[in-house]
Length: 110
Image 1 (tube, one colour):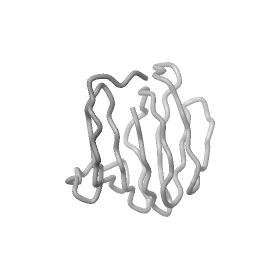
Image 2 (cartoon, rainbow, N blue to C red):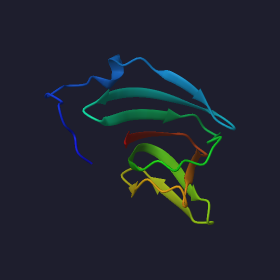
Image 3 (tube, rainbow, N blue to C red):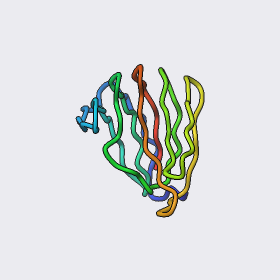
Image 4 (cartoon, one colour):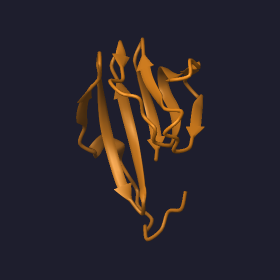
């Protein structure tokens, strides 16, 4: 990842407007910052959330609160709890999707 053309910026995530994205079940609420060729999100997942698509995009994800499960199309399944995360590159052949039984808040950089 190369971040370029971005001055030092402080983000008060509580002041960033939420965007609602329904999943196959449950809902996610995104607060988004984009700049310098990078997107940073704080995402809240409601209990019972399940993504409605397989995602090939690369991410760095960190669980701030709760529990978030990442499934790989090849059958891999990883339960991430507070303080855990994952890193994945762009990969059309090995997409992933997320869910959260109890709900979660995560930080995602992509």
